[in-house]
Length: 412
Ligand SMILES: Cc1cc2nc3c(=O)[nH]c(=O)nc-3n(C[C@H](O)[C@H](O)[C@H](O)COP(=O)(O)OP(=O)(O)OC[C@H]3O[C@@H](n4cnc5c(N)ncnc54)[C@H](O)[C@@H]3O)c2cc1C
Image (cartoon, rainbow, N blue to C red; front, top):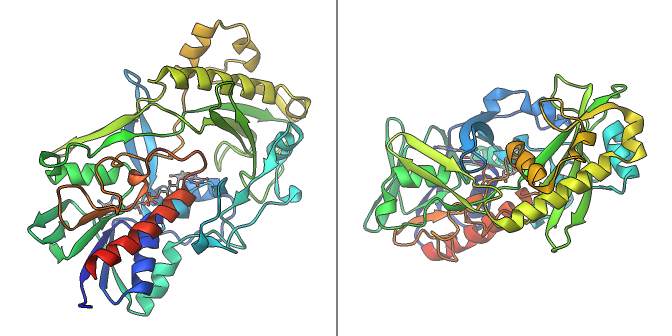
């Protein structure tokens, strides 16, 4: 088999897994281009402390709902990507690459909010943590040391394609390759591909974007007790029409607000879809949440369940007050809203959860290759068929592994 050059764009969750897989299974030359830095915070168990480092994130301007305001939306900007900064919640099957590298929290590692949710019917959730965070970016450092991959710190501006060869344009140079694997995430990947002009031959790039609609209540806590983890307890639920939702307890609202806990509900199985559009230097991201009436109904029931959860005596025992929104609306006052008023309130108060996916799912073939564009593959969250009915890092990891094998096969 001749040695080919593969460029991987982005060293986040999927980019690290793809590079690792290609480097260990083939002799191809692998060049990874990542615009972010290395985090160095994998020993930090409280993810709010990791999120306090703004150099590890990029903020995109996003509309969560049609005609709604534009809000800042966090995406990873570091080696390891979302896996280096995320909440470490793992509510689905553990991918084979992470076997033995996850754990469940213990009760004494939680704070009051997690314990209150346990008492209100919650369960411990698995975490991407085992004496350290599971960050696939760490494996890249090892592979660099063994000269199996090369990592370039730069920003990919454009993907190039001409006949059988592909390539990427960086800020001051061009790298030619036999294959380019896009792993820049569900917002940046379609943005780069659209800005490269591929919409001329592939009209599906950017379409189908999804995220989990989420509502968050804030708890003014009686006391601050330091916990080992910021989140470790969830409660799963199903609406009357079979849609799934997840209630998550957070011990702190941010690293600087230890007296404020949070409880969120996420609709895990949304139907609404949005899009990413981009031209020249402009990029619009519309997630279009609750556009589908089924999501409106499901989210209403999910929020009613959240209200019931925080009305449990275990929450009343730990919180002085519980607020439903930034205006200081009390949870009790939501009871008096009509269905129409509650639906409107939900739409106005949705929060981003950074689980975007599926923005290129119809633009690729089953092997991850970009339709009508030779030599370009996508292996990140944008190729999932929808936002997963779980926390997404595990499905992203599994899909990245699958596509890496197919990329390797296509070059053999
Ligand atoms: C704050 C936060 C909390 C989360 N919590 C959880 C959780 O608890 N559990 C869970 O399962 N999932 C969680 N997620 C989601 C999960 O981490 C993501 O679904 C997953 O990491 C997506 O992987 P990806 O490879 O598609 O993108 P990413 O991991 O985001 O990787 C994209 C990479 O591409 C790089 N990049 C972007 N543009 C360019 C460019 N032009 N040139 C070069 N490099 C570029 C970025 O710097 C980044 O490293 C969370 C995500 C965030 C941001």
